[in-house]
Image (cartoon, rainbow, N blue to C red; front, side, top):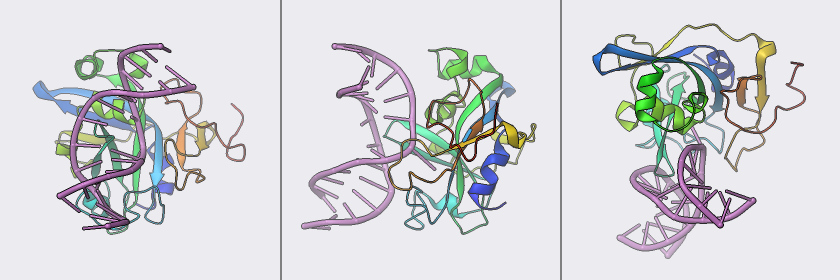
Length: 196
DNA sequence: TCCCCGATTAACT
DNA sequence: GTTAATCGGGGAG
């Protein structure tokens, strides 16, 4: 629990799990995230509490799902503290288990692309607005986060965020250096980069 | 109410 | 490299 900028890199290497019908479980390592803060003009919470973003202002550890371009759902982890409006966008994952269940939702493309990009990640995991607000630490639920292995700092790259205008200079995108499961995006900033 | 446009993707040329 | 698809939030009138 804390500001999204601090929690975001700590989510890398953890595992997102999803239960489908028949107790089939899909899992993916989180390899790319972005932080969004309340004083951040790119964040949905920037203009305060609304119907859409209410979950962002609620309990940390819950899932905030929104629809983008009228087409794609995007998954975020609320990082709290409650009432602040901080969240981390899950941008990409490395599929581990249940790839066949993911392929049901995404029949096209290669396995490395199943969870590559926020819209694809959500689609592969069968997540839409109906899961907005669920508790991500309830392993009896439909979707949750498992501990996984935290990423060593040297393996974390930092860059500006993808696809935004306002707040575009903030280096709040974090991803696993060298991973083929990371979406294409801005190059890592020199200051934050360490040698491969 | 109307209107514009976005934390994107896939299918084009 | 360009663009259609497709929805709802939220600012303007």
